[in-house]
Image (cartoon, rainbow, N blue to C red):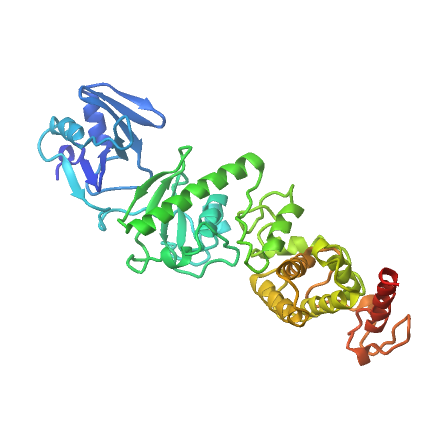
Length: 439
């Protein structure tokens, strides 16, 4: 191929979109007015205006220079005939190709950095790979939002710093993902029909709203879901820019731990964005750093957990008619669950186990729906209360199993207290409270 033939420019169609390269745009500019506009160009053609928007990171066979996506004065206007007339004036064989979806042989967006510190600084990647086919933890806020809101079903890769290409995820989603756009995200956004290196959509970040270029033709269900999730991501990213951070979507009311998620957001009104997940620090209970912030916020818990929990239950309007014996039993069940729950505090599994324990404790009391709901709410909120302990608790005052209670002298190991207060003293306190309210 001669130099003049290679540089004469090309026009392409991929699906319903038309593209031209820099060489063709320059040749058109010799015959009619082509002026810069919003990072791209517009052709003032006799048949009507044609806007040329940069297609960042994309390439098609035989193109010269950059690639531009063409559109009319409205995004849905078909400019194919107009462009073919403009291109035809340059000679025969200007059409570089027509495809219904992005050609598999064309150049795909390449990942310029694996995301590690060394790559980000232009150094060698510790993995020793030049292709960076592995998926590392996403670095930017936008990448993390995409991963979280899609539940880790897609893998974002930055292209030339001005675009993000989405690929089918090849690794397990991070622990902190919590997208709740739809309950079926994980089952719908699956890509067994795509290769690992086959990019799904390219997002141009230079515009206020994402300008998306699709690399494959998906079914309508996946296309619609991914499109709407990306629109949600754009809104969250804008909110984080304007207000300093964005909040994760709250779980449904029937989800174990829903009350704790709601309170967690209220307890962190001024925090910035977490360094691990893309949301306000302390508000995403699936994120280890957010959970750590909530647990470290609390001072030393009360020595006697049963009275502290009974007090929280007693404050609820729906539970004030219950006697202290009932409240004490429920409080002890919650305290036991917190002390022996095998799962890390504030995690999904922790709240699932807690709800099961509380429901079992409620069965003998035959409470109404409102009373039972109030008990469950307090059980879920209590791990965030400064007076309530969860998980393995340190021994109070350095006492050990077998040491006597400082108040009544009872050997703690005989009552199974494990050095955290004295159940006998707690029972005496509950009896005194019962007498106070029911003399």
